[in-house]
Length: 467
Image (tube, rainbow, N blue to C red; front, side, top):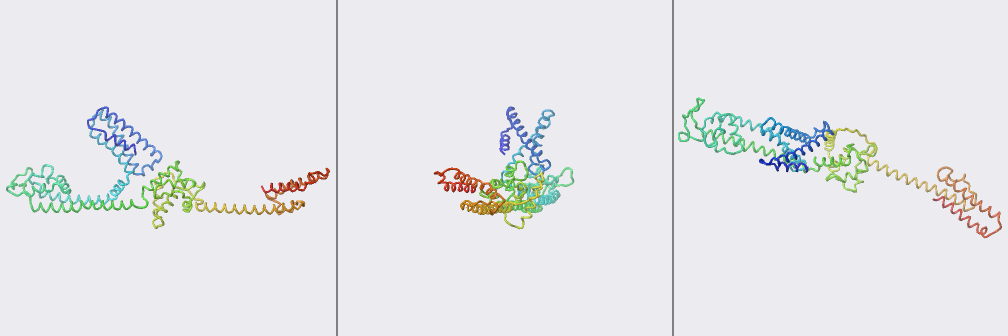
């Protein structure tokens, strides 16, 4: 957009009698802009191929670039073959078309152009009606006012002598401009203002007087039909369609909102895969503009939309757009039609038709995660109960100083049973070592305190089991 504005400023700088240096500098600047816009067009054409021409703005840019290049080529031809510079100037006017690209950023101008485009079929029909009226009145004027004396508004160009001149006069009258000057010679009466015996060269008709009564009826009826009815019909149709366009622009969603969605999508899907990961959905929804935007925190809202997901926890562009559109518009009978139209437009503008079959959804995935958490918690509680049961058995065996019978434990297999089989021999070994040392040596302070030490060793084994 900035390049277009700068290009517009450089075109405004041009003057009729500018120096050769100024002209060469402006030509170089214009050439740079043409190269930039041509490069942009070629990149789009290479990326989109035949789908490039499915967008009206792309066609417009392509035509402007072609005309600009033709203008440069004709500049050399003018220097070699002295072609009329008028043609060159006309073709150079195609550069002004670049400024119209700014319309894409001006919502009000787009509304006006949309109203005009909606009015074109009706305006064409009214134009045909106006031409039919002008055709009839031109023939009538040629038959009655062809030899009126040339004075006031009637001269060599504005007269009723030929069909073309009659059409020009009637077109002027349609704008309500100068009709009184055309009527004045027709109101002339002999002998003061005209001559009934005037010889008209090339014809047998005599006289150059008009017919006041016929002239008044002719002009009054034509002005009523053309200016007061037909021309006002133009205004009425344009205003009606402008009202419709304005109402559509006030709808919750418009084409601008969908274009904004795709522009933001390009930032998150730079490789044009048509998918984004579910982990990126929160940031994507927050990056959109109103009314499609879902500000953070939005995780619960996005999950409740039950968006279809494919393998890899990825979500398709259209599925997200449908869900966000449904959130804005709500449930309505037109949603199916709107969804079909959006699908058709998406398939037209996107060359790669990626097929996707969802295997789950955001809501189902959340339910699976919650279910997994619940199952894990229950299993942990089950393990804790088993651990407590085994620990209780081990505690009783150790503290009551009985032989630990691993084979009669509540469980003989699994993680806890393996822990008992590992730690119980350590406890038995500690106890046996203490007894042997007591029998092989005379009584001492250590032998007296052996019972307390044995309990401490058992307690260590018990704590080690609980870690």
